[in-house]
Every structure is written in C-alpha cells, then in structure tokens.
Length: 203
Image (cartoon, rainbow, N blue to C red):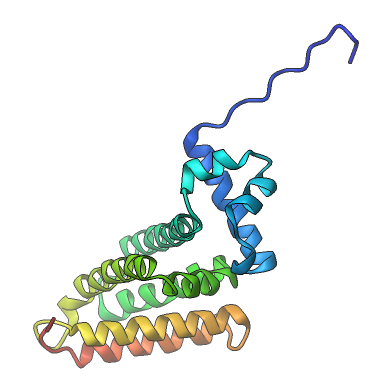
C-alpha cells in the first residue's frame, strides 16, 4: 500500500451482531477456562472492545450468565420446533424427537452449559430465570405428548422427572461418561414411560 492510500475504516457492527459476537466469545471463554473465568472485563479483552460496550449489553456478570442461558434455550427451542414439525405424529415419533433434540443441543454446546447452569443456580434471581425457561420447555413437552397419554394429562411431577433425566443424561453424554446414542435412547424410554403412566396434571 502506498503512503497516499488511506486504510478503509472498519465496519461497525450492528447492536445485534455485536451481541452475537460477545455471546460467541463468552461461550469460547467458558469452554476453555470454565465459568469462573467469565467476567465482563475479560470478555471485553477477548472481543477487542472497551468495557463500556460489554456493560451496555449485559450490565452485570449475572446479566451475562442469563444471556448465555437464554441463548442456549433459544437454540434448544429452535432445534426442537424444527424436529417436531418434521416428526411422525405418534408417541414414538414425538418422544424420539424430544429426546434426540435435547441431547443434541447439549452436545452442540459441549461441556460449557453445565457450568453456566450451575452458576445460574447460585443466585436467586438467576435460578428463577432458569426455572421460568424450564417451565416453558416442560409445558411444551406436555402439550406435544398429551394426546398420547392414557389419561387426560401428564403430571407436573412427571415432567420434572423427565427434565431431570434429560439434564443428567445429556451432561453425562457431553462429558463422555456415556455416548449420545445411549443418552437419547434412555431419555426416549423415560418419556414413553411417563406418557403411558399419564395422570391428571396437578400444580
């Protein structure tokens, strides 16, 4: 480049693109160093931006953790919705899709999501956020599976048990303790058993 040439200015990212960049950088940091290393200042350094840019998006570390969980939940919902739309309208078809989608989503996120979930559980306001998203997922599963239940509805307790199994099996697969196919098959059988045992929903 000659001395008379002026470098082209760097394109400023839109707010949405910047948020996407920061979230991807945050996931990378958690993947490499764990949730404990995740701070707004460290994220700013990794992304090559000033701290005010990061604070403008997340405000606090708790806000960043909440954004990561929402990002994970959004991906999980998108994966589930697409798979359900293409699935066979039967108990086996729906249960298989729920099981495979849940395990696949955690696999895609690698080992970092358990650390984020653990950090979320440590603060009351973040725990409430996690429970809110869990309830949305459970009720979606109930609506999809209810037509195949032997009784009129599926209990909230059963849905909680299903979610607990989904989390445990998915994280075991992500850590290499079991393989993803084993996790999906066990969760599939758990979901089928829950539906076949269906009883009235009691809050």
